[in-house]
Image 1 (spheres, protein in one colour):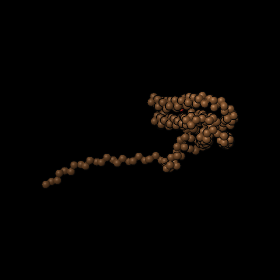
Image 2: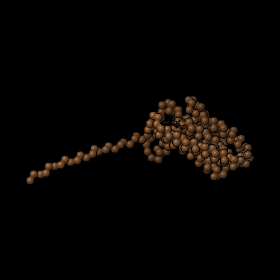
Image 3: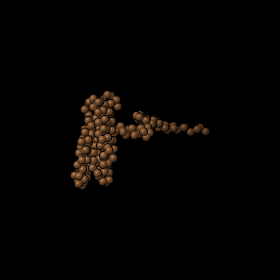
Image 4: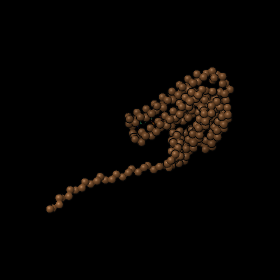
Length: 227
Ligand SMILES: Nc1ncnc2c1ncn2[C@@H]1O[C@H](COP(=O)(O)OP(=O)(O)OP(=O)(O)O)[C@@H](O)[C@H]1O
């Protein structure tokens, strides 16, 4: 008996090569995740004009909060608003990068995506200004009776705001200007801290000064060709 003709075996589909993982910059683990997140925050402060405006505005909110006795709910609301605006601006920046990655040409969907992300920030910022004004009006008696505290916050806080503004300005300048601005800001903050009405707001301002200092450093590094 002749053996039946062997039917040709179906050729298996070519094995798909696994897509190589993108090269990891800076390793993995908790510390690396924290570093990546920090880099994202500083990159936004360096490259997004609106983020720089939010930084200075948040510092001023911190100066008001650390100068005037506010209730717990009011403090929590203000801090939450500040954090929410930062979150929205960082997310807006992420979406802008994503859209630019998808298309470099004019595209109606790209426009809608970017405009919607920007609208999210605008809504939050407007709401925060309204909430801030409402809190001040609600505490007007305290504000009116806090003359010396307000004078102190203006005398030390405005130069502090100036130091932070200098640090985040995009214009090229000597490294010494940044150093003086950072150290000056730290000294002013140190002078404000002992008589603060809220250590949380003072800590927030300290954090903002550190972010501004790191942004100045990163901007300089980028100018010199480092990343
Ligand atoms: N690829 C695109 N196609 C169509 N419209 C675009 C495109 N890129 C940007 N736009 C329009 O230009 C606006 C500004 O976009 P851009 O990428 O310059 O952001 P930006 O100036 O950093 O924005 P922001 O003011 O939020 O910081 C967008 O809101 C959008 O209306």
